[in-house]
Image (cartoon, rainbow over all chains, first blue to last red; front, side, top):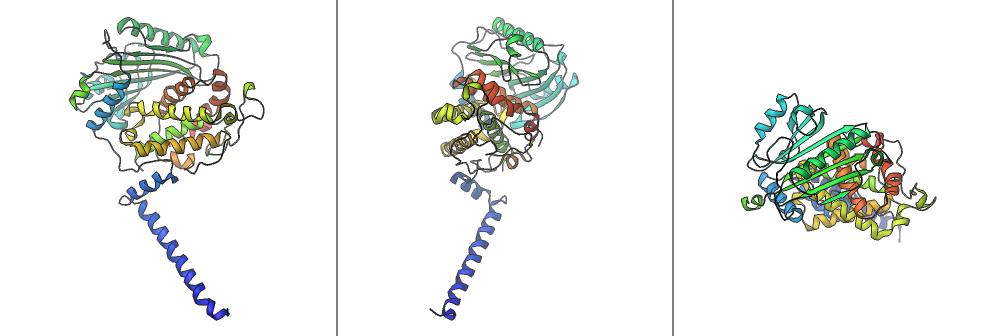
Length: 241
Length: 173
């Protein structure tokens, strides 16, 4: 085959490569625009991206309620709690405005959080109930579609193992007395145990038909994280859908 | 990409790092594969034995599924809305990618093709409380539920997730 006869084919290959490259760049570019992101989502589902969905996903308050109802149906207990402690708030009753006003009146800084939640930082202990002398680093409040409180999540950090253990034990005793017996408990709520190694954790969970609570104290290396989580588990949530 | 989804998925992958990485460097941009073949630092794991060697693929799959289940069970106020819209195909895709990531970082076959940690963290605004939530309410319970010993959690899994530089690469970005 002579050289002149091969040149057109070579040029065709080059042109083809250029067109293919151009098309790839164009598709990639379009895929990263708001209009083209569904395409990126499809590419992600093909396994090339660790995130399986695109950014068009945003749940409505009603969808969040439905999701919560589905979550809770899998974990709620059989009998109702004697009382539903939630750090001074009333699950299913306190409104967003009431909660925000209460916390800000005590000096907390609140702003919208994830998924319609309210997140407050540097919350004085006096704004809460269980540990009035210890400020909370983060208080996140979740609300349902009717803007009523359905979740309270409190995070405190301390460098003192004794303080973490004492707070953990105080909370578990308070919940046991007010709500009823715990469903599960792991680890030991003692300073010696918690200080014994990184990620040592004491954890107690309460599961009732209308209320879930979780208390944990975890060794985070340079500090201890004391976490409280209270959630409404009222079956009416499902009926509202 | 959707912010809440990215936040949640980043936390999942941050959790994956916590679960799988053993010898995270002080580099504030740890990437998948940085710790490939990392050995367990616990005496029980042996000097040259990786965590993948020690626990095997079945345990990795079990921990992988437990992490996803616990993340999916979290209230949306903690991880965002992403899981509310994740269909069966999306969950399966997540399972595969996360499993590949776990296996690769822990010394198994290198089949992970997803994004680097640095890319996944950009613009997510993850707070210290959210990071703590993922560690205390997803990672630690998942490891414990699947039978990982306290010694391996403490010596093998805790160092990277509690490393200040690693946390700084995730929180507040």
